[in-house]
Amino acid sequence: MKTIYFIGECMVELRENDEDMISRSYAGDVYNSAVYLKRCFTDTQTAVVTAIGEDSLSTKMLSRFKDEGLDTTFVFRHPDKNAGMYYIETDDTGERSFTYWRSDSAAKKVVRFLNDDVIRGLAGANMFFISGISLAVIDAQDRGAFWLKMKALKEAGVTIVFDPNYRARLWQSEDEAAAEFKQAFSLCDIALPGVEDLTVLFGVNTAEEALAFCHQYDIAEVIVKNGPESVITSLEGQQQNHPIVPVTNVVDTTSAGDAFNGVYLGARLNGRAIDEAVQLAAKAAGTVIQHPGAIAPKDAFTQAMAACGL
Ligand code: ADP
Figure (cartoon, rainbow, N blue to C red):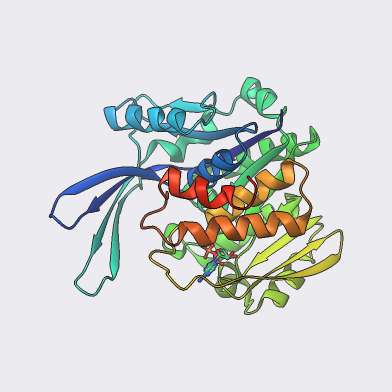
């Protein structure tokens, strides 16, 4: 059985709905990717590595992880911190705004739970996924220890995957983010950047520039996402352009990139060639953006993917 770990933060999502009522769900980039991967590749052991609290919302989040079929062996419970949370409001014009309570969340402490036994457990994985949001969330003083642990995983033969997913507000400064991203690009074997993730920090404006940027590093497999425009990949220096069929009925683009990442990595873990993996990932992303919220309804999503033979 293939195994992939996603490290980062899942948050409680509160959404104001039409009747001035609030509905609750759970979301976060790495969690979203794990969910979509598992829905498509049920035989792949898919795990979230994170810290949550001992509060009741954290317990409900943990149940949701299990309901989605995710492995929770490395979901740690912090004795005095809680799960992060955010609130989505939509104004009269349909514009969404977000308010976050995550600056003191349990997930910021996850590195402290990664002791030698845990690292030995994680070292049995095929892939380990890190996002730029995971890096931003980790307590700054734990980052040195984090990179040593990631190097140990790589030396043990785990494929390290990185999506920069740049969110300016989560970083103290652009320099801080750029330094962490360079560490990640230096270490990873697969990179999945969106063009916009590299614009502010590295002056990258096109998919070709994003690919050239990644080629400064020794990264075997690069997948550049560029919204509905196209996807460009390079495997061991072999470049391919993959056209995307634009979706006209776009409802909410939240988690398009996350769905793409999860399904792409699931496909690659299960032996699919790059071109097929991109087509499946694009189908997943194109389906997710036709539904509101980060996690599309399971039935609609699996039906759409079944049409592609999954
Ligand atoms: P992110 O969510 O990380 O910003 P992108 O906006 O680049 O990522 O979108 C990720 C993927 O979602 C794209 O590579 C593409 O496959 C798909 N996608 C995004 N927008 C559209 C669209 N309008 N029509 C079809 N597919 C889309």
